[in-house]
Image (cartoon, rainbow, N blue to C red; front, top):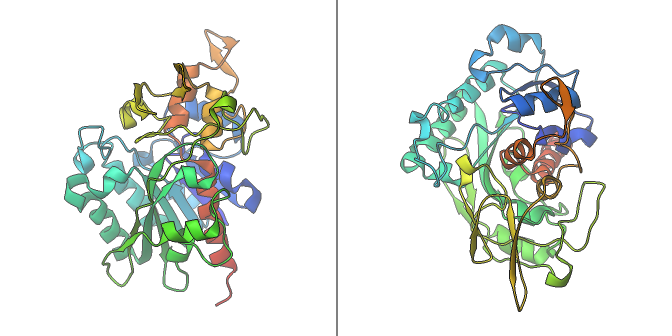
Length: 347
C-alpha cells in the first residue's frame, strides 16, 4: 500500500503505520519546524509543500496512490475559535484536500478534524465534504474517536472520516468494531460494546453515514504514583500514567483548542493538574510527556535544530505546538489496521 500524507505535521500516520509495510510516497507541510522534522526523520520522502500549489503533474509523478491521509487545519471549525468554517482561508484548505483526492482517486482516504466541524455553519461545511466525496464515488463513514480509549492517558476527541472508492469494501467496518478486533487495551469487551451502541445513524447518498458519541466516563490513575506520564510506544517508562481529566485536550495548540480545564482547575495548554488531600500542584507537561500522550516514540520531536548556525536544543515551544496539532498515533494505527483487514478480506 502506498499513501500520500497531507497537512503532514510530524507524521502521526507514518509512525502509526510503519509496521504495516506501507510506503509513504509524499508529504505536504509548510511550517518550518515540522518540515525540518520530516526532512530528518524521512529524508527520502519528498515534501510537496503548500497543498494549494500541488499540481496534477506533481501528483502523477508519485505514481499509484492507495491512500490519502490528512487533517486539514482545525482552527476555523473549533468551538474555541471564531467558527469561520469554510469562509476562513484555513477552512478552505478542505477543498484542496478534496481536489487532491479527486485527482489521485485512491482506494481509501482518511480525513481528521475537531468535533466542532460537525456543527460548523450549521453542519453545512461537513455536509459539503460528504457530498463532494460521495459525488467522486466514495462510500463514507465517520465517527468521533477519543484517544483515551486507545491506550494513551488523554481525552482527545476527533472526527475521523474514512472513504472507499466503490462498494466492495466497507468504511464502516474500518471505524466500527468487528468481532475479535480490539481497539481498547484497557476496557473490557462488554464495556467497548456498550460504548459502540451509542451511535446515531445519518442519511447519505447510496452510503450509510455514522456519527459516534462515546460516553464521558473517566478513569484516574493512583495519585501516589502519578508523577509522570508513562510511555506506551516510547522507550521510557516512569510510574503508573496519570489520566488528565477535562473537557478539552490536555495538549493542543492554543489557536486550535484554547485553555484546557483539568481536574476542575483552569490551566494553560501543556499543564497538568495533580491533586491530593492537602494540596493542588500545577506543572507544565514536558515535551517528552506530550510525545507519550500522543503515542509517539520518546524524543520524536527532539531533532537537530540550528539557530544562528549553531546546533541548539530543540525549542520546547516548537515541540508543544507540533504535538498539539498532531493526530494521536494509536488511533491512526487502529484505523490503519481496519483498512488492512479490509484489503486482506477475500470477497
